[in-house]
Amino acid sequence: MVPPVRGEVASQVIPLFYQKLQSHNNHYLGSLTLLVVDYVAIILALLSAWQLRSTILPYFFPELPPFHISGNYIFAVIPITFLLFLLFEGMYTRRLPFWQSAEIIFRICTYVTILAVWILYFLKSGHVSRIFLTMAWLLSFIFLSCSRFYAKRILANIGLWQKPVIIIGAGKTAEMLAKSFAEEPNLGYKIYGLIEDNVGERPLLTKYPYLGSFMDAEAAVVQSGIQDIIIAAPGLDHNKLLQLVFRLQPHVKNLVIVPNLIGLPIGNLEAETIFNEKAILLRVRNNMKAWYNKVFKRMLDLFGSVVGGICIIPILLFISIAIYVSSPGPIIFAHQRVGRKGEFFSCYKFRSMITNSQEVLAQYLAINPEAREEWEKDFKLKNDPRITKVGKFLRKTSLDELPQLLNVLKGEMSLVGPRPIVEKEVEKYGEYINDYYLVRPGMTGYWQVSGRNDVDYDTRVQMDSWYVRNWSFWMDIVMLIKTVNVVLGRKGAY
Image (cartoon, rainbow, N blue to C red; front, side, top):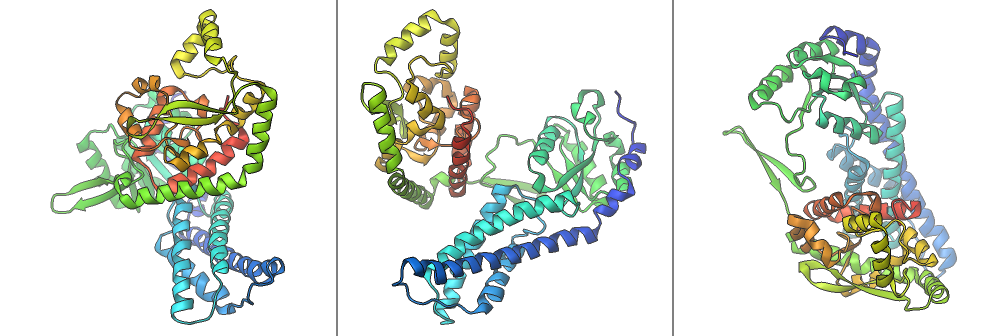
């Protein structure tokens, strides 16, 4: 079916109802509602922290001294400080994915907590418990992140957090944007139409209204009244792009350009401008080079492996007994893997295979060509004859990798990083192997939280490289949180 022609469609697909829905009043009402939700969430977090410190904990620990904090701090000083930080960060206007928003909230909670310590201690405004501050910091982060997530979803559903956009271009880049908007409904972007020249080659035009060609862009935008435009045509000629920008900018509030920089490290990207030369400079920071980031990452590894190891001692004992009873052989298996700087180390795992696994594998591949092809491609077998009954459960739940906490303690691995590889896999990494050598392999990582064995090998390699080039301390925390969800869901594991 051929899309309708040019500007006449704009009046059909964007009725006055939607324009009213996205009026200034609705926009401000959405932001105001979000502000009220934040205020309530902060107070609930502070009251919960106060209740835990003043009532619940003293019941279990009678030696704790009495604790009191003025209601002015609970209902005014601290919440207003939070709201000012949120306003400064643009959290009532910016459209951010959940994890990026959570990172900003995490920073804000940390800053406000430090500021509260300064006010309460250095200005002698009263005594406050360190336990209270710690719980207030943690609960504020949890309450704010969760309440904002659900509030935005509700506001988007009733039209108070929706932002209508017109996308210029309907190719692969536009498809990527449409997919992102669908997967992150809290962003609030709603595609009201597409502007494209190559009508017959764009499947996206079957899903969204067609507003005309690039020549019709100015008329279509003016007629629609939409104030946010995204130019998603990275292959467009430079001069044509400039002309398009000059034509559209006077008629809209926000004009976003998606440049032809797909694949560039974006996690640490900063933009600068040189006005005299009309030039844009993009700075890509390598966080892995900063010594303090290395210290923070190592501290997270040590803290996580020690605390985590202590917490799972009963699980480790249960697994050890199950392996010992079900199959003869050692409980822990050590396999040579390639680590940072290309150095080899013994990677520990709970034994999930029979003791003569190499001989069984060789025989199985010799009589099964399809399995040989699968092995040579990914170094994995979905139906591996070497795996024991207990081993199948351990692999499905990733519990076989728990002994790698020892590798983390020894400094051979990290909690988060590229998946550890064997020597034969080095050549498969090609030019990306230098990225792999920069960091310690991880117990979990980008590949593990993105489908694991359901992801093809080339994509795994690119994921490892992307992680190294875009690394941040917050990314490691996100990966650890996502790992819990992936392990519980047993997605892509075998």
